[in-house]
Image 1: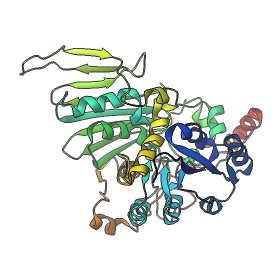
Image 2 (image 1 turned 90 degrees about the horizontal axis):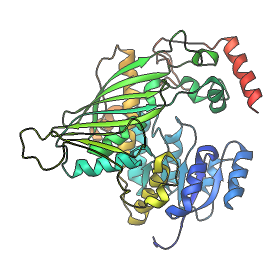
Image 3 (image 1 turned 180 degrees about the horizontal axis):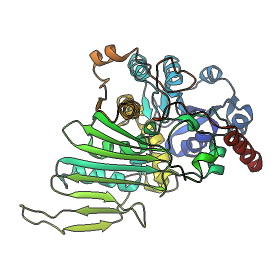
Image 4 (image 1 turned 30 degrees about the vertical axis):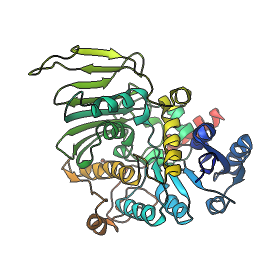
Length: 412
C-alpha cells in the first residue's frame, strides 16, 4: 500500500482502545471507527477522534474502507474476534491474551495464514527503553549465550480500584487464573533473546488469610503465580506476576559471559551490565549502569504510555502492514506466550508437574491440539474441566458482593 496515506483503523473496545487512539496518527493510522458494547463509551471515544461509532462488531467490520482493527476488548475474548476480522480481510493487532485455549490458538494461526493479512500481538512491555537496550546488547554478543532469565510484572490493587476495573462479579478479572497474565513478564525475555518456550512448571499463590484487600471483593481465582519455563536451547526463565505487593516490572538476563538487568529503583530506563570477563582478555569495565538512548522514534515513544510500549506496538504494526510482512510479535509468538499461561495453570493443578507448551508452528502439533478447549472460564467451562483457583470451586460470599456494590456506588 502507499506509504504516504494513513491506514484506516477501527478500534474495538473504547476503554483500553483509548491508548491506541492517542497514538494512531503518530504511527501512520487514521481512526475511522470505534466499537464498544457500551454504546455511550463508544460514541464518546468516536466523537473525540472524528470517527464513526458502533455497538456491534460486525457493523465495525463493514465500515467503508476499513483496513485494520485493534482488538482491545476483554482479555480472554480476543481470538474469536481476530478470526472474524481476518476473514473480513482486515489486518489485526490484538491485545493480550492472543487465545484463551490451545484450540483457539490453532484456529487463530490458521486464520492468519489463510488471510494473508498482518497480525500483531500488542505486547507493550518489550518496547520499554531498558528492554530495547538489552535486546541490542544481547544481539551484539555482550553477555554470550542465554542461560537464565527473570521477568516480573507486579500490579497490586486495592479493593476500590479492583471494583472499578471489575464492576461485575463475572468480570474476567474476578476469575482469571493467576498464570494467564504472564505475557508482560515473558515477552521482554523472548524479545531480548529470541528464544521460545518449550515446557512449564506452574506455581500458584492463593490469597493469604490476612490479606486486607483480596477478601473484601468477589474473587474465584488466585492473586499471583510463579512460572518456571524451559526455553528452546536449554535456558530457564522464572516469571512472577500479578497481584502481589511491591508494584513494578523487572527483567534480568544471565548469559555465559555476563549479566544485564533493568534497575529496580530510580529511572526505569536504566540498564545494569555486568561482565567479570573471567577467562578472557578484559575489553571494558566490569560493571556499567547507564541510561541508553532510544533506538528509533524516541521522541514519540517517550510521550506514550507503558514506558513507550503503547507507541511501538502500533508503530511496528504499521511498518509490517506497509511492508506486507509480519512483525516480531506475530501470531506465533503471541499464541506461544498465551499458551505458557494456559499450560502453567494445568501444571499448577497437577502439583507443578512439567507440562509441554505445544509448538503450533508445526502442523502436526496443530492437528493434535485443534480440539483442545480445556478452560476454567466459568462461561464456557465443561464438566470435568478446571476451576480458576487451585483451591477448587470458590463462591463469592454475600458480604463480598454487597461490599463490591457499595464501593462501586461510592465511586460513581
